[in-house]
Image 1 (cartoon, rainbow, N blue to C red):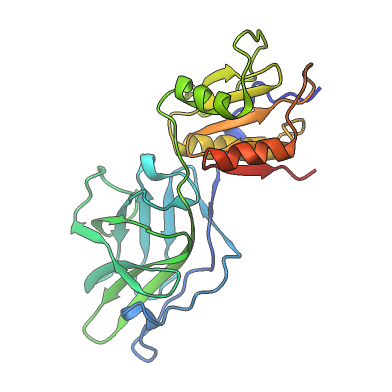
Image 2: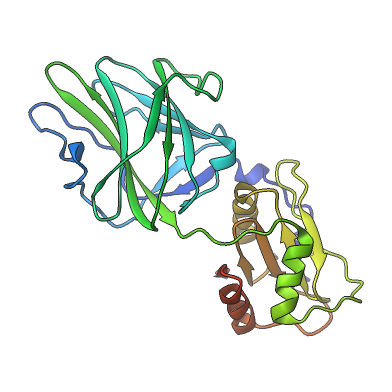
Length: 282
């Protein structure tokens, strides 16, 4: 019998911000192609940028300045999603005019809201001036986030590429999630099966069994769901496939008595609810 009961997020202390290429910089001899966003190179998303447990983005590779960005707790789900503004409190060393912006998947510059100071307390525990910036992604794909210092004799920019996914629906309550799933799979209101619990940093998720073999889980936010997804992928005896949305999972529990829906049924459920179908590699 497969069992993921009692899983914790301790093993997932380092979150992977699904992203693209490594940071880069430019100088006066080689002006940054990112100044207008139109010539930003859009390599296919292939590498991984690590967003640690401290939620800090480390852009400290430039010779003229270093930058560290603290991602707001509510936005720290990975990868970032369309339609979900992401607030980052920056600490930036060096001198000169500070600027930050996005380049969309086509390389077009997208302005962001920015202001001096940090509204999220002190920001990351790093040296430098404090700045707040709010980033919004209006389409999925590989985006670039750029941070720049413009000095009297040169301009230096650091960039990091982020994979952005289409935002998927969320549910306001476990009852709402149950009703949506029941409308597709036809839940059994008389089931007495016990749910499997997934523990995420002490945050209490909500659980409800749809049938003897199908469990519905609703999380407080997308970040908790993302951590739970990582745990499910790494579980030795976890589900072989499941459906997920912004803050929910529909799990097919292995080893339970009763008829279990197959991959095609769960894929159809995910499509109907606007979520994603996930198949876990062996």
